[in-house]
Image (cartoon, rainbow, N blue to C red; front, side, top):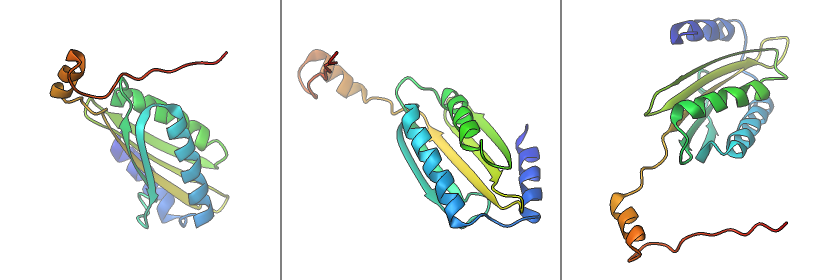
Length: 152
């Protein structure tokens, strides 16, 4: 689906219904927060709420190392499928390239068509500072190497 079609369908729902109450918005936000953090697709996740009916839940994320924005988009689409499972209707759009991923979604929460809208943006992983990488490699500066122990 293209962006114009998504916005047209979302607008049709918005013109014929009201935004969901805070309880439904908070519940979807908590579900998304848990899913995004638990996915390990992102090194940073920050979600919030606005009064903007097109972006009732907003989020900015930073992709984890070795996760491209388009890969994060595929993962967010799967998470959305789970988060929207108990809703009456859903629609979403994912767009991504090497520089960012954007997810827009909307659900209706009840038979009256009360809706929640979501807008998430993800940036690529931080690029390490080449001077830091060189000094760690040379062993002259930088943090000590990390290690982990797994108890069986």
